[in-house]
Image (cartoon, rainbow over all chains, first blue to last red; front, side, top):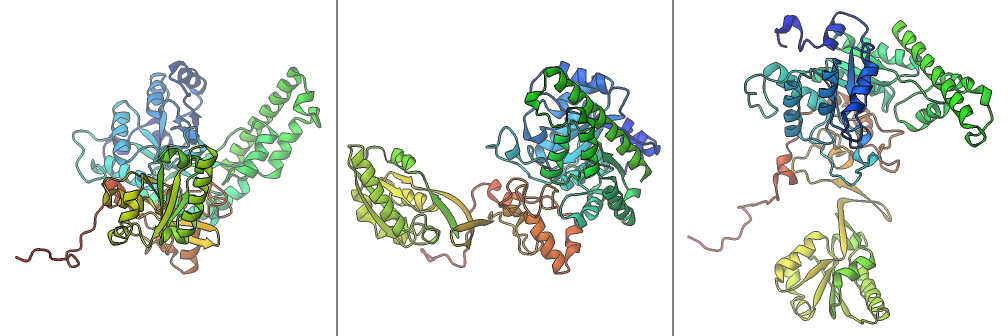
Length: 302
Length: 227
């Protein structure tokens, strides 16, 4: 690894916070399905001062949106540090490397490498997918690009190279569950400097996963950021429990969400006045945020 | 084997237009085995087209013939006369058969009656599944005889991705997760360490991505002109 920058790989704010041993906080900013920069600026203003860096999603759920690098440029202008997300779904190795040279030139230093949701889920299901490489191969390619200044083909990068703090996603509760800690180890071996996990609602199960990760010694070679997300309603909690692969939502969390709306218990949405609906949503969302805060406290303990 | 599915009748009718003499050509190999374009299907389709054209007040003279393999010149030579008499040829072969007819009979207009789907296996009666993508650089030796290129929705070399549930792919609960199958097989055979090795980016140049492919075997070629 590069000895430049006082021992830092890229000297991003995120890297400094992580290497100082602090608890790093990252958020997520989804670019709009349009070209209005104000949307990004408004979202960035909401996050500024609360996060160490913000993930900018890349055609999330395979729906066309403003590009991650374009939105990341706007975020940088707002004084917030972006974590660019890049998927293997839409770009081959030429496009990935070219776009990232550009992103580096524009000042971006953190990157989350993802394989990407299959295009069948998005708004262009008839598109040709790329998947020239997978996320692990992307991390490895970009580690070489940063540390050895070479492209994937082996050619030298001319002049300065593109160096990013490289992140990967981890799904601690996905199938096959026994392989998950080993897959994390593989991602770290490929060069992942940090890991962002799928949403955690079940801290007990997450603790079991982390125990295995520690047994493998992986926690010493990377920074692991547990993913948390506020629930909007008991319906959302149930949907995630039953329909989203790799997400565990314990019954107690669903009960807490249901309890928050007990004042309107047994009433269908059609029976509620707009004011009542608003009040119920507000009650659910307040509890969703509280659940999130409690999860963070719990995860910190483990 | 190569599998195919017959196109909808309306689409076939549109391809045939108002041609008077139609020759339906079946193929006796892969598409016979997958019940899409053999002699039986050629006869049934011919009858359907005759009836449909009568109902449309534009009766067409539709006949059919089936060759052993549309993808070999010698079999196509056998139907030279029938082809010459037809205004249009409807091939029930795979895409290779259609192209072979076009190439072998340059004055004949040939249209496809099938959509060629994949190289696969009859999993059970009436069910076919894709198995091979002809990528040109077989990795089945690494993956326990289960191909992630053809069978993983994202063609991952370092799977599984985390999107599967109960052994099925996130794109469709009917599709088995190739990497779950690979994981189970390598684990059961004591070869799980293979899963921990980082597989490098694939060389797609030897697949279709490198352009149309050709194999030349000098040891098998006929020597036409001895020096």
